[in-house]
Amino acid sequence: MRHLLILVLFLGLSGCSTLGQPTFNVVVDSLTSGTAQHQKTYVLLPGNAGVSVNDLQFREYSTYLVRVLQAKGYVAATTPESAEQAIFLSYGIGEPQTQHYSYQLPTWGQTGVAFANSYKTTSTFGSMTSQTGTTMNTPSYGITGYQTYTASETTFLKYVQIEGVAFDKNSRSETPVPLWKTTATSSDASDDLRRVFPVLVAASAPYLAANTGQKVHVALTESDAAVSSVKGLPVKGLPLE
Image (cartoon, helix red, strand yellow):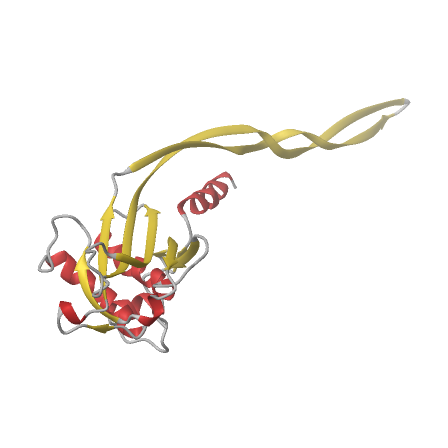
C-alpha cells in the first residue's frame, strides 16, 4: 500500500501523460491592435539578436510558423517592400531551475487489538473438576506514523514570441508600429527546445494576432492533431483554424 501511494504521488508531481507521452502545459499571452486583422501580407524575420534568415535553426522553426500563418490566411510577400507587416520570430530556453521539496506518507501496521475471544474447557476426573482458558486476540491495523521523503525536480523554461509590426510608408518616421504580439512559454523537464518548439507554436496558433485578455493555459501532447499540423503531418480536420 505504501509503495502504491508513493507511485500515485510521484505521478501527480510529475504531470500527466497520454500513453507514455508527456503533456506540455503551455501558457499563451497575446495582444493585438485594431488593424492587425486587415494586414495579411508579411515577411518573416528572426527576432533573436545575431540570428540571420539563413540560420539553420531559424529556417527549421520558421517552417512551423509559416504553416500556421498560411492556415490563418496570411500570404508571404514576394519582396520586403510589398509586405504590409514584418513578423519577428524569437525563441529560447532558460537555465535549469531545480526545486527541492519534501512530503510525508503514512506507514501502516498493527495499532492494537480489535477484539478478543476467550474459550474455557472444563475437565472432570472423579470428584475433581478443572478448567483451562484460552484467549485469542484479533489485531487491528491502521496508520502507525508518517515517513518523510525528499525529492527534486529540474525544469527548463522555453519560450516563443511572435510579433507583427508595420511601417507606415507615408510617414517619415522609421519607428515600427506594433500590430500584435503572441508569447508562449512552457516550463517542464525537457531541455530540448527543438522538440518542444512545434508544441509551443501549435498552442499559439488559435491566438495569433488576437487578444486573449489574459494568460491562456493550453495542454498538448506531441501526437495531438494541432501539433501534427504544425509539423506538416497529415491529420483530419483543420486544427489550426
